[in-house]
Image (cartoon, rainbow, N blue to C red; front, top):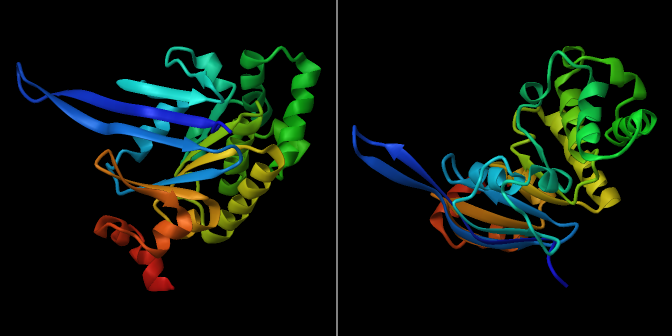
Length: 257
């Protein structure tokens, strides 16, 4: 059976000026290949600057690759075809408040991707919006709220609702739980697990938290300076890390065990 996501030799190189006439190439992501099965979660861990957010941006389409291919369900994704990608891959960001428009109601913000990517009429868009709000544990009445009227946890639920409203095949979450307190974080983790079970989505989950990764992920990939150091089942990597760098990333969990 073919994987849902097949990433082949994906790279990202930036050119930075280092003088009046000199330019320096920075390899944010070296040739990277991996697959994600349907309904599974791949976690990506690494220190700041490891390339994990670059990889998330490449997969979601926010960043264009220097080389390589991204294949979703057997279809090559083209970097310049936003509509093609937007219907199948959606992203949840770390800062839900910053990702929401303070001047638009929650209902308007959820309907926006429906207007641009579907042929649904106004009534159908409203019905889909209400249904999606309920899927993430919010109420139909929240359609008329503005972001400032909601708690941090509710804003993150809205961000998740906006991500799933098009019924994507893959959701990319870039440190989506990092700013939440522990009680709200646990609620959102359970919500994500429930949504994955109900909607059969795959996740790519960027996180520096071993606890969250162990709870959410099937497989984990360790990045360092744009390179894959380790990649395998989360239990195998966590129980027997092969690199000292991986051991240091997991140290907080090992100390608390």
